[in-house]
Image (cartoon, rainbow over all chains, first blue to last red; front, side):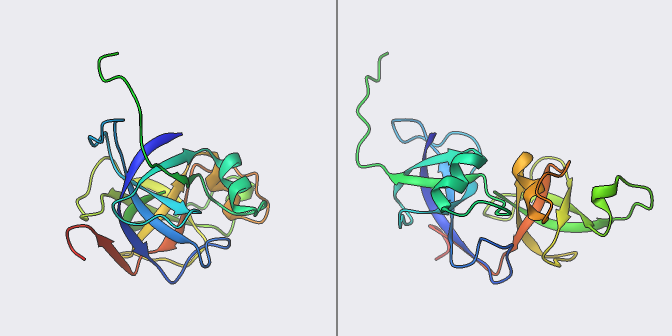
Length: 93
Length: 91
C-alpha cells in the first residue's frame, strides 16, 4: 500500500464491465510528510474519498477485486482502501 | 490505472489465438494535465474507443481480465473513455 493525495476525479460514460457506478479519482503518491513522489495515476474509490484527502492506495489486482466484492472479469488493480487521518513518523529516521 | 490518448491502431493478421477478434490500439500515456510522457504502448480495447479518445487503461496481469476468458497473455487494456477530468487547478 502507498500513501497518496487525491488531486482530482475523472468522469466517464463508456467503461469496462465492473466499473459502472464506481468513482475514479486521480491520486498523486506522496511521502509521509506530504511531498509529491513520482507520477500520478488513477484509482477506484471504495471509501468516499474526495479531492484534497490523503488516502491509502492498494496497487494489486487480487486485493482490489476483494475490496470491490466483484470477482471475475473486473479489470482493476489500483483501489483506494482508506482515508488517512494522520501519519505519525520520525522524520529523522 | 493511467490516463492516455489513443493515437492509432495496430493491425496484425498473424497473432496468438486468444488475440483473435480483439482490437489493438496505440496509447500515449498522459498525465492529468494532458501532457504526454513516456513511450507509447499497445493495449486491448473492448469498449470501442478510437483514435483521438482520452482513455484510462490498466496494466500488468489484471489487463487480461477484460475478456471473458480472463487468463490472457495481455499486459495493457483500455477500461474507460474519459468525458471530463476535474483537478484542483481547473475545477
